[in-house]
Structures are given as C-alpha cells and as structure tokens.
Picture 1 (cartoon, rainbow, N blue to C red):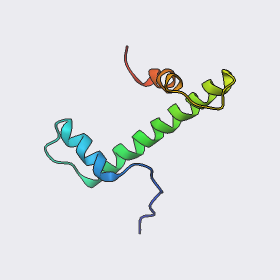
Picture 2: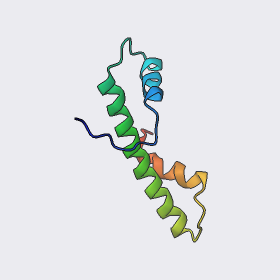
Picture 3: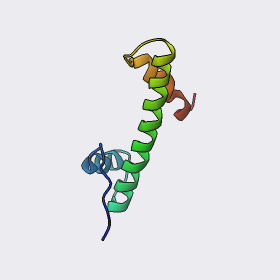
Picture 4: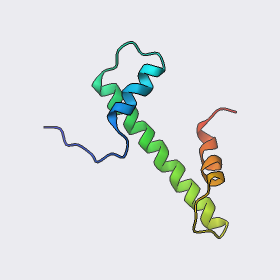
Length: 76
C-alpha cells in the first residue's frame, strides 16, 4: 500500500499542464511527479520570499518578494 502525502495542488491540474505543454498521453506517475516537483519549488520560493519580507522589516509577503525569490528558477 502506498502512503499518500498531503498535497496543496490538484492532480488534475498537473494533467492539464502536461497536456497543454504538448503531451499526447500522461501517466499517473508523471502527473504525480510534476506535482511533487512544483510543490518543492513553490516551498523554496515561499521560504525565500518570507526571508526577503522579514529582512525588509515587513510581516506581509509582497508580490515583489515572490518575484525576486523565484528568479533563481528561471533563465534570464
């Protein structure tokens, strides 16, 4: 029996993303893995954004914090 980890993102969204990106067919495992990877990246971005807002002396995380925190994951 496989134990399910609680997730924030829906599996159906992962199927749609893969399909919209050109996949003809999508396995359950690939959709689940995409969800895991995206949630890991999102968690890292969120932590970095929180650090940035704290460093700026704010309790509120702003869009600029998220944008800056996510830059490491995108090519310039």
